[in-house]
Length: 164
Image (cartoon, rainbow, N blue to C red):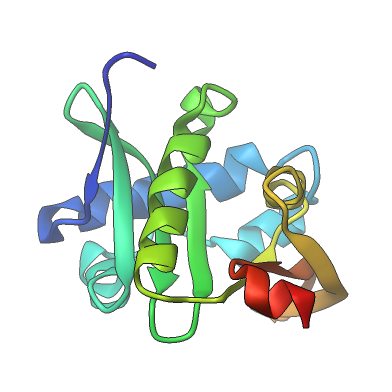
């Protein structure tokens, strides 16, 4: 995408990213999760202040098209946990997630992380697998009383650790 901009998170992004998350869960995961599961995962758009509190504490990058946020990934650089990876369903499959991911993996490497971990949805699992991640464990997490299947995944970044 020619007009795609990848940039750091800004406090004024919080409301827009709350909407991206909600649409990604409600519409983007529909082929893989039932309506009750999607409703439990994201019952409503959360207030921007709650999102800002979480996203400002970890390394968050935002994808923007025409000045509008359309996706975000957030990585905790203290432990390598990729906490959020969401793209608006209207731009899914157009390289937005790949561009975001390339930036975050580069930041992880630059910060000396040797391993990344995440809990990937059924939608995200193939994306991560295509980038060298492996499933560590299949699990079911509880959201608002409903069980959602996902995969605990990891990616080894340092060759030294991979050889061990």
